[in-house]
Image 1 (cartoon, rainbow, N blue to C red):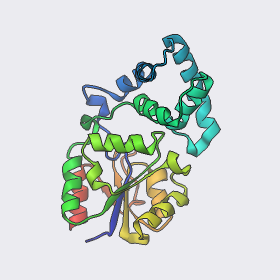
Image 2: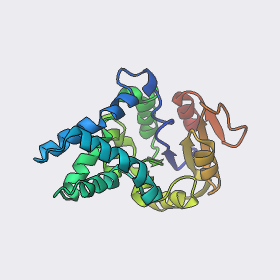
Image 3: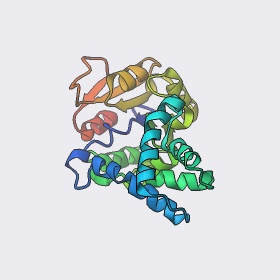
Length: 237
């Protein structure tokens, strides 16, 4: 095999077709208050929509600054429960954070993504995720499971869980320790020149760039592609 391990970015690399999907990312986000209110009601807590919207909107602005790279929706909901003085623990907070995040849909994946990862898996490739995300890891895992990708992603690194973001070399070194490998035999696949391509290049990894905006890395990435089938062909050549 050309590589010993392939790490992928998530949004913009595996996901990216959300604008043309029947249910868009904006639609899911716009329903977050309703989902949180319903989740709270499921635990026997009634909070009026106006108060919930006001408090949550305020915390959405302040909490990312408080936690920095360690921010995620789990911490947001813990702050919400504290602000509302609700007698709910971290167990309930985890469930409510999942509701706040909402679903991700298979229709949001770029065409051919599941089949491509299945083909790489069948060829013997080990694969994983390194993502800058505000979604807590348990919620990201649930989403990947829902769209059929979790069987192919054995190692998953989420920035908010470890309070380290790309392009910090520390997140790539953390991923190296998890897979037991380092250097050019690891391929990182992403769509952001600074966070993905330069971040991985700076720790000595190989890089593949999904073209979009910008349309090219002008030679910074080892490989560039438009459709994931091109990446599969490259890895299997």
